[in-house]
Length: 623
Image (cartoon, rainbow, N blue to C red; front, top):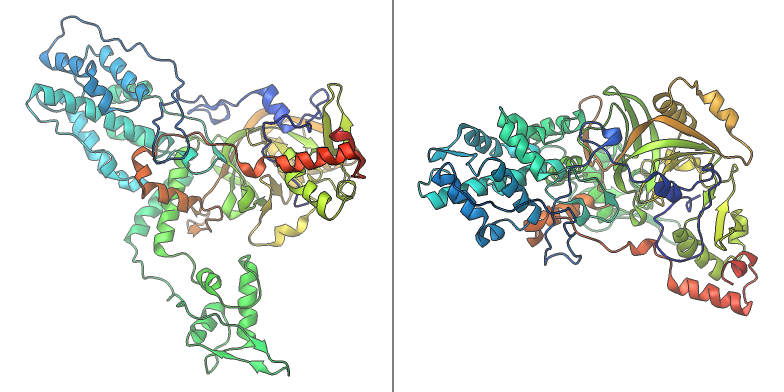
């Protein structure tokens, strides 16, 4: 059903909760609390150890407050005493000066740089005998090439490392260290922090300035070390290679766009006579839609039907009327839009873990497909239905831990208050009964609203669990009709899987090998009201991605619509004053789409007090 999802639960004291019985009936939020957060590692995605959090800097350009630096302070005291060289003394003086605080707004970066130079007795790393070291020259040369990764070389300026003035040399030394830290942060976690784009994006931080500086100081090939901070998996590398080719293509290649113009429609008058509109775009429109060429420029019935068919394939109102939105869809994305898609997708790969996992799942939201990989090869694929734009599927990486057969749907507060109660109040007091929802009171007095297992259960017969802060998952569905559509953004954030039994077999072969799960054995578990939990011995990383540009299995560069407007938001940040602080995360208020309405609560409480509602469940619920 279109209301079938486990949405983002508001942190309120409302009375709908989820129950668990020995873990078998555990809801996703209880599992998150009991299992705890997943901590992935840069080397092993299934158990990723994040780099220490970076300091964040507030920005006056953002409506939300910047995330404060919660990392414990480092031992950054600067010891007195004689040093080996005047250059080292100048570096120590600079780091102890207020000028250094102004040079770097992030406290954690300042602290890390002080620690770095303390371990070297404040000896310079990048300047040797008044000139840039060989390593510094190689690093400068590399930073001039980062456009190949979709970054702007101007963001990583190299100071003058040849200045003979001792104070200027010390400042140039420290500034270049800060430049390299900035690049490493962007390569490891993104030029734009994901929190600035949407509250429904969440990734672990892999950046640690101390670790980065140690890697740079120990490097015997600085260019290779800097490049290693970028993602190294095949999906990123393939897109990076296509970026080079795409930048060489001319913007005017491809079919000539259909020009804008007046709205065209086919109709008949009251007597049934055709009313034909004439337009010079008609011949080109016939050619683009594969309609047989005819003399004249009339927008006739055949062409209107072809337009309607195209509109249906693109999830546009299929009325056969040629308006601006249909013209844009026929023309497809512009060269600039395609370039934006490539750059934005590469940036989002920097947000995600750079090691995807030996076995892993990648779901591409705007492509509406889920793919399973093992040992670098795709082993299975299926169609999915994803969240509609108003209730977007989140971008995240977590691990699948178990599968539930015959799941119970514990109704989220957001769905009860935002969708079901308005229907109940305005048009259908029997909506809860029709959906087969039940209510039970827990020993602590709280209320649980749920839909028992069954063929009409909103989750279908199988649920795939990867506990996450958004409380979304993948599941079966009784509504199979959506899978035949080209555009499949209709859910409330969870992802509906077209072939859940096969998906379960594939995932269990990876997560619980040797247990002999097959499609037949899984089907035999289906039925009745008993939940069955199938645990994984090896947890499998699940990557919910947003690739508006990607390279398919045939090596062809593919583009998809920016259905959530994420590409546009990312580019808007980079073109605004916010660019200066775009790599600093911000705190966001809870998404209002998922907050129970106080008006609904009050009306239901009032109705329950006065006895004006006949619905027993909610009389009981709000007494």
